[in-house]
Image (cartoon, rainbow, N blue to C red; front, side, top):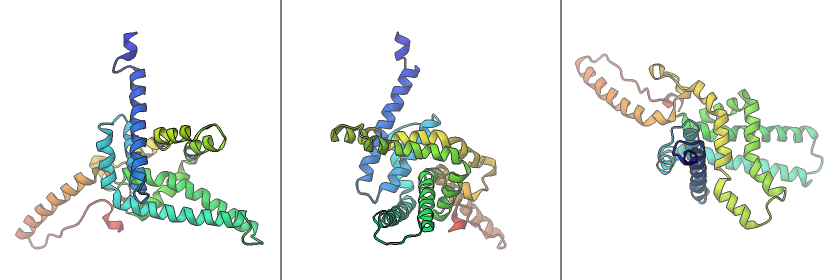
Amino acid sequence: MGKIFDLDSPLVRFLNKVADLLWLNLLTVVCCIPIITAGAAFTALHYCCLKLVRGEEGYITKDFFKSFKLNFKQATIIWLLVFVTGIVLGFDFYIIVNGVVGGTSSVIRVGLLIASILYVFTVLYVFPLQSHFYNPVKTTIKNAFMMSLTILPKTILMVIFAALPLALTYTGIWFSVGALVGFCILFWFSAPAYFSALLYNKTFKKYEPKEEENDDYTWSVNTDKEESDEADKIEETKSETEEAADGDISKENVRSGDEHE
């Protein structure tokens, strides 16, 4: 009986994982309250979830805010693009469904539906990619779109995971506002993000450059950005020293992603 509650027992590991997801969800909810910071919060959430899936978790709070700070600028830009595009698509659906504009052709309806599906597919991957790979915003969005179609079966499962909380809400399973609020605080964001990380983990590994062949700018791992910056400073100092001895030596900025900006 004692072995069940050992620190390395499956039950204790499961309970620890549940506790981590609970805390992650709470951090995400709090950081999403200002709305403008939601992109950085979702990015940090996926950063931590991927570490949980890979068994690399350390201090959840420290890792969360490390990613939050590192990705804040680009994640916020992506979030604003996602938010505005979602509003436009939602407004278009409202116009069509409520017949505000008469005589809308079936071609427009189908086109809007396809655009909305591709939008959802891209959004599912854009924050995980931002959390793990260091690229310009345009490249991150393009990679998210391409990846969603490349592993379409997994993408569909991710859609199901993401929609499950909403489905539980609108099917009448929740009998009180308190139960709904409680679920939102506990697992609304973290549970779908964790199960999604289980799905895209192997795909991400395919694009992670090997340490000795880190020449793929499109898929530079985001967690290595700080170390890369430090290496750039050392290389620049070295280059300046060599240039003093030989004026023909040219310096290049090799930080991942800079060539795309």
